Length: 499
Ligand code: BES
Ligand code: MN
Ligand code: ZN
Image (cartoon, rainbow, N blue to C red; front, side, top):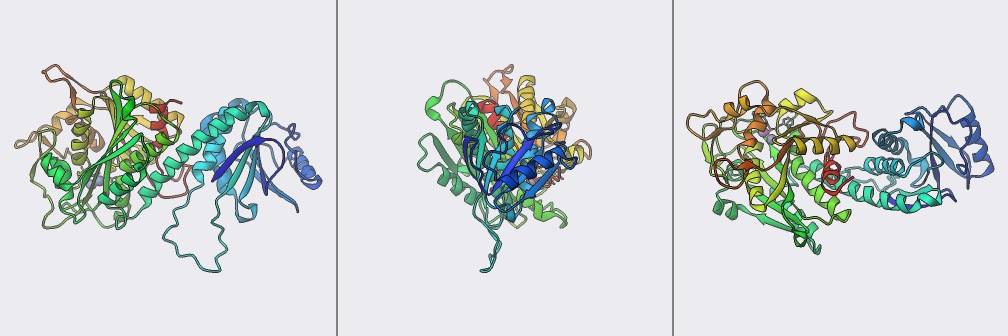
């Protein structure tokens, strides 16, 4: 979508007019630029019972020179940014070919800039297709030209609306790139392909750098998590380290770590066949990291921050790691592998430990880590674990404000005891049947680095987001039709860059 912001004047092919419940005549200036026929159609629709402005109501009006879509917003006093974002997304989704690609969205009396921006954000987020592998017929009349949208408001709001739309547009770009990576099949997106796309994005951007630790460097660094998970595949693993605004370094900085399993067969502990195709999404933690870097760069973030993507493909072969293996990790701790399908925690172990070398203010990891998290929370919320109450609350709030719920889950000592109960290694990678997402979080906690050396040194503030249920497959998320969601790109922009 291309967009611009301007005063209320002319109307393009289709006018989108979001209206509040209880409005019984056309608001001041809402009909500017419409022909006579259009004006009278809108007036009578608003006066009739057919359109009451209730949230979710939408009606399309047609005449020769223009089309109008009335969008019900509910009561203006009830307006929240989450429901307004949904309304924008639903309005975009309801458009069809006959509405054309040139849209005018007109905000009239009662609209605050923050709500206008939320509506625009919903439209932008929903405007996404992953159709690069669909052959196009020559006579295909599917119109692939992007939407061009003019957001109109009264003059006094124009400066703030311009800034707000630019910001949400940068965020939507990041979200869409995260979705592209998530949707990309595993025969196209290998760990090193992710690395080269990261390098390509950073190229020429003076304040963004990407460093890739390839196979030999993983070996030199004894990154046993990445090495062992990745060694069964002909597509080698790697660690991608992102740094934004290194020159602004001034004390500790946020660090985000993403699980990037480009395909998770389960390895020697092979997964059942049904639904295994979905394991192409098992790199969504790293997709969110990529989208976050794009979005933070796009909004002009000035602070120093870093990210680490832990990339590998989990495949069975004669060179794959096995159940029963004891493997080293970058932290120095050994792990008894009881199930090669619990691989995400192993690559994250190396990523979390690496984060400790960069003076973190806090560390947040994102991972499609456990099926158990989907059982617990469905597709409605990511699981959220943290060793720090302030970080947990800040992250929870940033997620809620973004309409990307993150639900607090318990980090219990009993699960830590379970995961450190191996007889032959420091940690084991499997708990018992119950509370599987909690034992996974407890495993990760064993690899959160400490600030200082002595016995009483404290772990850095750390939070873990299990996005197994929210990274794809949500039917209630208005921002996305199907496939990868790009979840938590916006949450983390909000947390790191501010509201
Ligand atoms: N990537 C999966 C988790 C997953 C499963 C995400 C289904 C989304 C949907 C992860 O690597 C995995 O296989 N986890 C195992 C852990 C178990 C072996 C302890 C699981 O959840 O079954
Ligand atoms: Mn797995
Ligand atoms: Zn996995």
